[in-house]
Length: 155
Image (cartoon, rainbow, N blue to C red; front, side, top):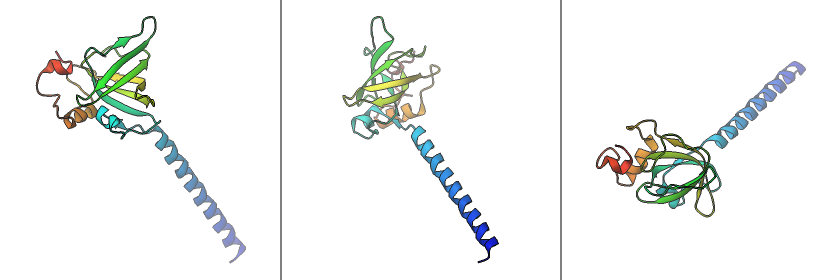
């Protein structure tokens, strides 16, 4: 092999190694930022990742919202009508947050079974419910588009 070819081959191999390293680091960064959606039934069954952030969606159980006096800490129970997960959130809730409403919370599940939410998202109008929440409710045997609208927080 001539010295010119050897030099070109070295450049090509270095370029391929650089591209490979870039792809590896990009996929690792994307993997760390992906959050999957789980229903309370799935979390109770142990399908949610331990120690990792994920999205938890369902209905805020009527009568479960407890606000700490003098702080912005709020505790409530999120349900899909089959399972219930206690949620703790420290922050300002969305204006549309209320009991009986479908929400999605982002956070981690503690070892004691309490979901520590970093962010709480509420539906944006009276007819909208997150597609993940609707699917979780349908999987639990309840169709949120039928039946008593009071049951799902719509009036």
